[in-house]
Image 1: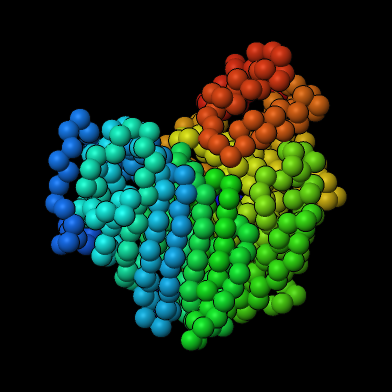
Image 2: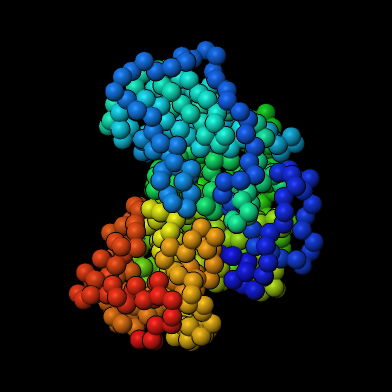
Length: 497
């Protein structure tokens, strides 16, 4: 994620009074930061059951899956007892009344003898749940959809859950992380946010530790675009509605799934033999700074590939949205979403494009296992900005390092920064300092070999800081833990290497 604050657009996002397009726009020129939120401010539809499905599970020797995946920062995010391999989403959205209807098919494997399991779902009404085609009991407990199949699921068993649901989607908010998720706009909607977003529009195991593939089919009124992740599929129109299809075959963390609906100028082409889809809100200039910035997406991705190894996905692209309530850019897989605020100063912003494209390697392909390791995403992407700036004729990496070193608050750790510190300079900028200090210590050849090795060995998976340190020591052939401990967690400025 890139934040408007990092481009000098300081402040916080607006306070939400309603999740509908009636929310007043932020006054022109007042640019602030809003990030996707955590666990407060949500609606609770209360317990519901499917009247036609069994009310219990008579199997013995089976236990419920946990209602959270075990992340210390977000104990209720995700769920235990199963691992998802793929989602198939079929949704229909009518901007005239904000109504969303959907059917989500979730293919998973039980990781324990499972009597029941949870899916994360905010605010929408569930009408029917089946597991392997048989009716299942479903109960709402706040933002948890609790599903009890007709029979227990043995460990190692693959099973398919289908959920039919509908309603007016709402965003999620927290006092320390702001607002994100589904946002209704004047001409459609935008679903984007970190660390939580997906659960506002489909049932999901909402934590990056459980990555999965996605097939997404979105039906909207004819004339509107419906943009998402991955490779575009066949588009069809009937009876005044158009269905857009997208497929992301590489495993994807749930917060990286996006859906952008509205009036957009969509350009579809190819780059390096893969689809390139870019889109810019129709209200923005066709040849303005946003368009000029996105036009270099392929070039920037190619440069990063020389440093990080082959581009990890089957498609490229980017989307620029024009809703002033969104004050960040997010590395939504294969197709980052950028707020117009990043292009409001009159010129292109290649730094933010570089940041989000770097995340395709570090954050998207190589994903964190726990949110306390977020520097593995943001420190790497921030360092990529310095690499591109130097490559593009601007300030050198060393000059950026020196300036940031002098301006760093060393009392704030990069590793395990605390929930409220997830999106602070300690993670982003101090994280970049960590990498340059490592580079200066081991030398350029070893450093960039390490980055390529890390991206290759952890591709499509999850990782921790401890694993990064182990790979760094192996590639460098020397102990590096004391150095990295000082730069990641020390409370005083380490000496420059």
